[in-house]
Image 1: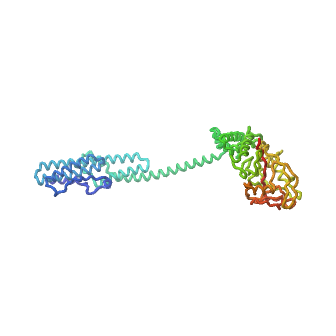
Image 2: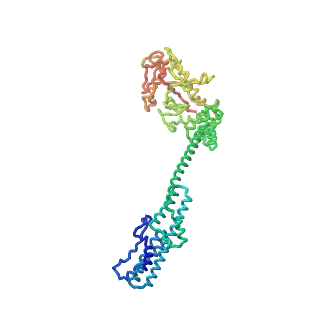
Image 3: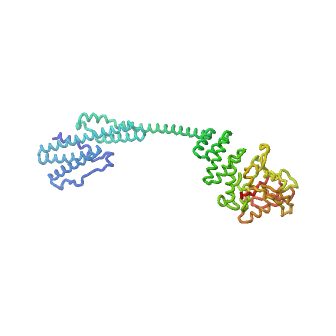
Length: 502
């Protein structure tokens, strides 16, 4: 009997007096109706212990993890042992006591078998995760499973005599769980470094590809292909921009295609009622070639007239900005059949040659608007040799159809009333400068139609002395005493009357 007691005591090696790290998060089922010793007779206590043991066995059989089954098979052994002791020590019935001892042995063998088989299954799972690992997290998962086996087997070793020799041999093959856990942790670190190197290489390759692509996108060949592609899908606005890049980099072979695409882009913009874009596209198609492309000049003028007739609809009213020709203008007056425009931004240089503009090239006491260089340049259209003698303002900034809309204006002499300086002879011009009296009128009436500027700008009114001309300062004040007309300290703001009756 002493030998049986020793064997039974071995079975209680993992009672719940101390839980493993893997038991701390699990629900520990303790039967609430257990009755403590001293509250009933020994026989009643024995019957209660057997009932408790039976219930713990039922709990163990429904547990999924082998650690839980292991734990709950330990508890009925304790209660069956108490019943065995009752028959052995109180009833002196050794035959019945031996029956319970045999039951304890069977539970012990079942408990250790479950412990062994559970450890083997968990070890095989860890090996499978390790062998198929592709990422650091996969190796860490395998490490955690091996670590779980190792920590559990420290407190819950497997006794060879309680399981079959075959099962014990299989269990011994899992005894390197601690080494496997360390190996998986090391492999996770190595894999992480490998992925970092791989990511770095991939990133460098991607960056290199992007850099190469960006470099290629700056080539003329790419822009040519891009223009063809965008034109094929109907995006003519983007297509002409790509062709423009090719032209700007010296490949003139694409010029005809550029003009054709620009014209088509204008048609697209006109359909969607985008007047500013359509006007810009038709202008490029009308003035770039020696001859306007198709009806681009007529379409351009029609859209400009539509905008000039209804500035309040497309831009704004008196004193506000509206586009005409190759620039923006301020609306000074509007009549039923014509509109009076003043260039919005002042010009300091010839827009073709880049030379600084002056009212006249030299000082002369007989200077008037009539014989000034600036009048001749503003109204110059034709040029027999554009390279040696480029056209003036009227010829360079407007198409033929636009010039037809700019009216000839009869200009009386502009007398300087402050100093009684003669006015000079009347002229007829398409492009001209304002007089001092006009500026005073447009800056004093509502709405004020001439804005402040950053520079002084010339008038066609003579100054106080011969060879001088009046000007307007940045605050819109007329300076009647004037400056020497050959000085380059004033800018030019031309004005025109445009026919909107056609």
